[in-house]
Image 1 (cartoon, one colour):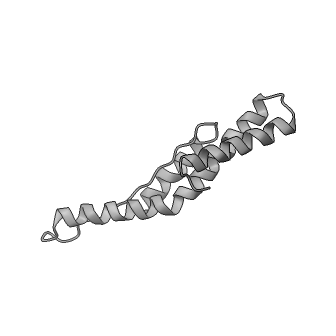
Image 2: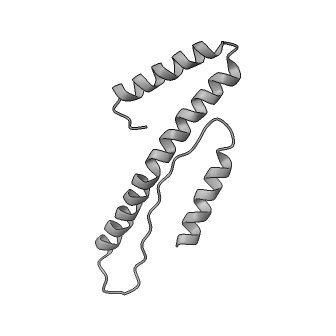
Amino acid sequence: MEKIINRIQKNCEQTNKDQISISLALGAAVKNEENEDLFEIFELADKRMYQQKMSQGKKAKRKLISNILLSLAEKSHEDNFHIQRLKEKAADFADYLKLKT
């Protein structure tokens, strides 16, 4: 299962070459015994997905902010002072939304 999850994540990362990035959390569990409760298998997969989401959440947020700033720098002919002000406004907005950077 790990190989499949890693392959899906790798394909998403390669797709993220453009300005649009995909953030994705996956969790998997396998029912090995006939008497195992299917609900417990789903709960285990959900728990693993949530753990992955928590471990990758900060990285995804940093990447998103970085991509936005890079896009602004590439498309804007403004000076560095203006770009710095935009960074500060973006950070203020992230604070307002209670996003941790």
